[in-house]
Length: 131
Image 1: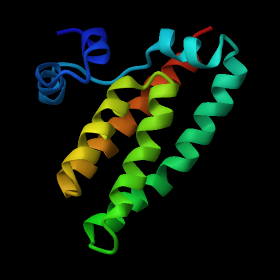
Image 2: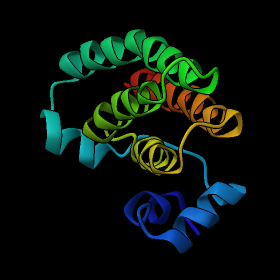
Image 3: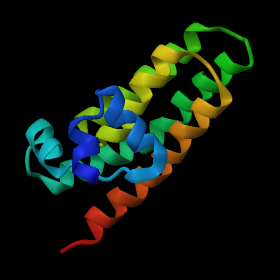
């Protein structure tokens, strides 16, 4: 299965399982990015900076839910991760955040989101390193 197939079909359970099994790693869906935000790379840079600067806050919400402070924290954190991820073309990350939101708080689910977030940062860095 290709990365593009994982991104396009991420909401299909069979496709999600193959993506989770490591058959693909997240990358930037440039078509989704352009469709949602236009072609301006300067704007893209600002939006990605804002998103990745805010991401630790979302992860803290998720950690708080795991520690038992407030179960709603999980929903808040996952929602923050997925919404902008989808908008910015980080489809696998958004799909994963959506799925783990439904499944509920767990350390392994948080770890999945953290890993995908780091891999997404690398994909974005590669995007901006191109001429």
